Amino acid sequence: MGGRRVGRIAALALAALAAAAQQPPVFRVDVRLVRLLATVKDDYGRLVGSLAREDFTVFDNGVRQEIAVFERRTEQPLSVSILIDTSGSTAKELRYEVESVQRFLRALFREGNSQDAAALYSFNYEVTKRTPYTRQFAAFERALKSLKAEAGTSLYDAIYLASQEVRDRTGRHVIVVVTDGGDTTSVKTYHAALEEAQRADAVLYAILVMPITNDAGRNIGGENALIAMTSATGGRVFTPNLGAEMDAAFTEILSDLRTQYLIGYYPKNVPPSKNRFHRVEVKLSRPGLRVLTRSGYYGDAERVTLEEEGPKRTPTP
Image (tube, rainbow, N blue to C red; front, side, top):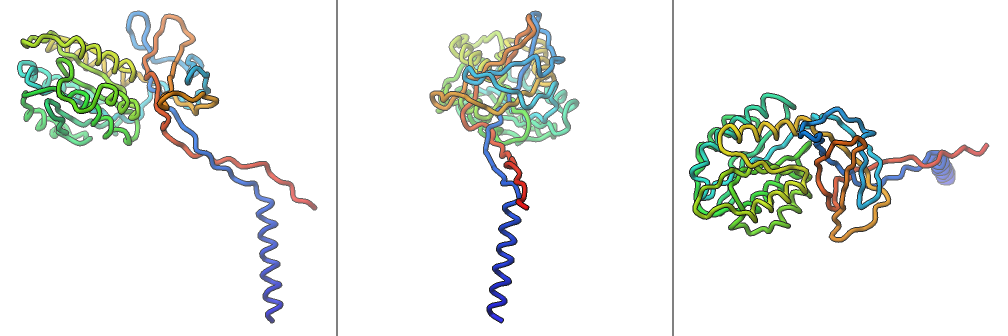
């Protein structure tokens, strides 16, 4: 009896091995999906939302890449972080800024993806998160009414924190900063804040309230820092006066977001780079157009697992 049982087990094992040998092996490989949000404008500054995949060419550290994902006027959900400067120098402008932010939020929630959400932060000598990501307008109204202007300007700390908190959210990441000048009290540096925004794949817009009328005068260095930071993430700086011009700036931001292209690729044959930062360049085949997108990404871009079957085997007769 024992000999028969052993023989039966051995036969079953051989049969299982033979079946496995006839099945193709599966290889699992981790690759990076790099996502780029791009805005295209013509020579007159008008948005162009009708381009096709073939109109774009992407280079990663100088090596041309194959576009694997393309969405025109993408409707992926938006996570918008709104950062309001409440330093002492904003006391006169704060009420007008709050009113413009309220109108922007109403427009954001009125149209677009039903999953769009926003979070509100204020910053002076410290950064305070006023609301989590939500679509509840009443929560923003309560938080905005409680803002008071005082003390310094921790702009870089605010961008750093907002970038960290938006990083793992699904869809598109946007940071809108409303400020009147440069950083004065941050612990984080300009480079640390920019790196965190790039790691979060966040597009940064800045509304730099003009003119700045406080006794300290305009902080030109701060303005230049914001211009460089927004450009590196695919956004831009607006310099409106209060009232209608500020509303127009928010309207332009919303138009950009509703006309964005989503471009994705899996990096191939890319040479190594310093600090793991990859320089990205997007070119257009049509003359007279310019594209706004981030300048690059760090090596830990979004990872996707691909499964691929190996060569099929033909059973031996």
